[in-house]
Amino acid sequence: MAETFVVPQSLIDTYAREGAVLIPQPFGAHWIDGMIERVERIVHDWEAGSQAFPVMRRNGAMGIQNVILRDPFFRRWATGSPVASIVAQVTGSRRVRFYFDNFFIKEGRGEENGTQLHHDVPAFGFQGTQLPSFWLALTDVDMDNAPLVTYAGSQGDFRHRFRSPAQKPGLPLLPGYREPREIPDYLAEGGYEKRIHVARKGDVIMVNPYTIHASLHQPSDGQARLRIGFSSRWLGDDVTWQGSLYHEVEASTHPRPLAPGEAPPDDWFPVVWDRDLGPVAERTGRFTTHVTLEPRKGYHTTLEGDRPRPA
Image 1: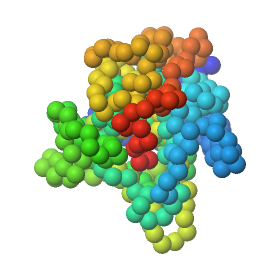
Image 2: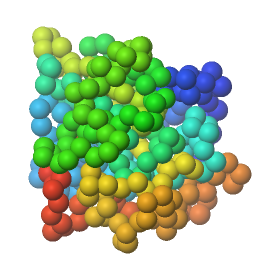
Image 3: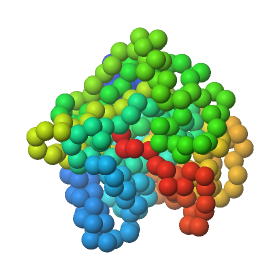
Image 4: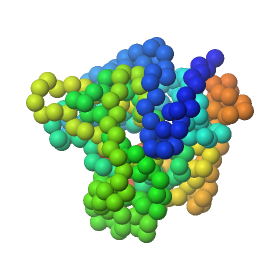
């Protein structure tokens, strides 16, 4: 039976006001310990030559994508833990569907493994305000271990979109987008206050897709420390397809073309949690098998090889 967790109204209000909130310890220790054990095994096997999981390592950071679709323990977490219910409570969505996930692992020292200022909305073809990053700390994340930084209230102006700093050079600036180098001026003009989210292992930080955020780097002096964050993405009621030239990779994974404004199809993204029905996926066993943001084998795109730097 799926577990439950009630998010305090004060935290829901903080998320609505600031575009990010830290939720302390919403999961039992068995989930956290199991996830740590599994990701350590995935990395160990990859270093030994396994290609079972798509792992990327560069500049003192490592990324692993779509683990929930490939690992039974993580899938049980997605359907049997309170994660989908928490997303619904915080975003106000009636229904929640699973989208995709990323492991963000920092293992180096120095400025090279910090993350530039950005927001997530331009990175995905499915867009809406109810598409949060559910960032789960699997190590302690103190001031010296690359904590997340957000800018309170920066999610409020939907007119501004800044294309990804990791986007391949040469693509045109589409209408409605600004260059990422303009983000500091945008933050200064809006007077948005900086928040640094120090977290314990097992804490969650939820971030609105429009919220400007980054991560600090680990200090260049002292002993290197591992920082593991697991970000799952979820689709709420207001999410629709808004694909463009920037979303070729994602569109390449679709079984059929989607029309602008089309909601996530039920057969690709079944409902995981419903306000009236509760944990639907846990009861029915229906869960997405759609692998998103990974190009099909043999697919060539102007964006091929480019991935966002880990957050």
